[in-house]
Amino acid sequence: MIYIKDKYSNAIILLTSGIFTFFQVCLSSINELFLYNKTFTVLIVICNVMSFYLFMVFISENKVTDNRIKYF
Image (cartoon, rainbow, N blue to C red):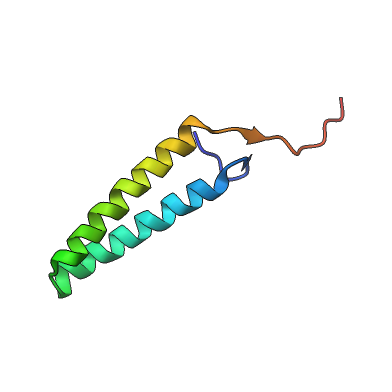
């Protein structure tokens, strides 16, 4: 599970995966509703593959950095 409060050692990979997912959703809606173009279709597939790949890399290399103060 990915918790929001935890700090991860490679959180930038999770951020880029989310950005690729956001671009994929935006381009999909533009491609289906307003303007159909094969270039958008190629970009959607590339964004989808990159988002899944980066998310799997994040899951496989996940390490939580513990910055909490231990009292005991």
